[in-house]
Amino acid sequence: MSVTPTTTPDVAPDAIPSPQTEPLVTIVVVPRERFSCAQRSLESIYAHTTLPFKLVYVDGNSPRHVHRYLAEQAERRYFQLIRTAHYLTPNQARNLGLSYVQTKYVVFADNDVIVSDHWLEALVNCAEETGADIVGPLMCQEEPVHEIIHFAGGESHIWVDNTGRRRLREKMYKQGKRVAEVRDQLQRTPTELAEFHCVLVRTEVFQQVGSLDERMLNTKEHLDFCMTVAQRGGKIYFEPASIVTYVPGPPLQWSDLPFYMLRWSDAWTLNSLYRLRDKWNLAEDGYFQNRYKKANWRRIMTIISPFVYRVTFGRYSKILETILVHIERPLNRFLTDRHAQQSKSLNAKPTDSAPPTALPQS
Image (cartoon, rainbow, N blue to C red; front, side):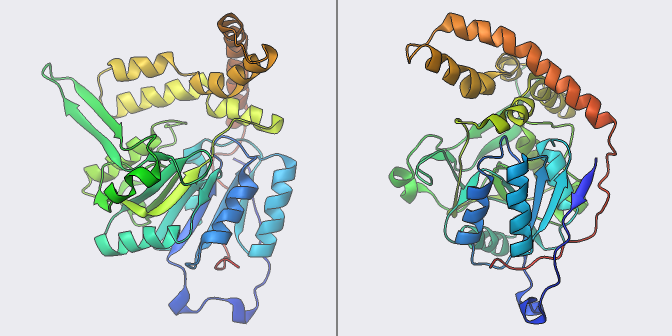
């Protein structure tokens, strides 16, 4: 993997944090599914975070205009920018960012999240007060931000049915509910699940469980990580005092399409599910069968359906959708195969793993 770390400029002595104010947290920002929200997301972090932090930004082959913006911000705000010349899977990006972390905690944040006031303080306070290894915020979805719940804690564990089959239990609490309607029901509590949209992890956890599984290419990696930590006796907490929203596409910009189609490709989705099944010795039950059949649902929802609505002037056509699905699938296989061939020709290790020079936010 070819990696170009940004060298941060020299820092004035009076700007360097003293030992007493050395940040406890490094925020590692990684690409989720597109790049067109990168500026808004990064600016929200600097606008709403008052707790000192370090920042490592992993730029997995963003379009040129996004990379220019990130390079300018890295120079202005003294954070570590790491750019690769090809697209990364989420866990590849997180592991790359993690290699630069030297603080007590790391926060993994996708590049399409919008944070709220005191979000980071709430996560750190929860970890400090409970000894939690993983802390997840109240995760909201879509716009307007911070209004509709995506995830408020949940379940992720293995259970054995009466035939002896090992099966996966996954449940997300309060999804689709309005924050205003259930806020008084939400409280800090142990949970089995936190999502990688935004999550705080005690950095020493990775000394115990190793790096994130890069064979989990694009889905269910949060289940795998949380169950791995819980299996070793780790504690996971939900902290509703921290509110973060992820803003998915559509609309996508044209420059987002290649990465989006790869990120949610059939091959990456199916191989992730196969890895989860085999790693945890799970029965191939309805949970998996349903997800195999719907491997392309995000591409249909975000790319194909909006196009069908547009060309039919809002009437929609299931026949046209079916035709486009049959056309798109071979293209998706081509993009996935091309990326796999390119990846084989690249070095799998970063060329520079020196720790970043970073400052609290300006």
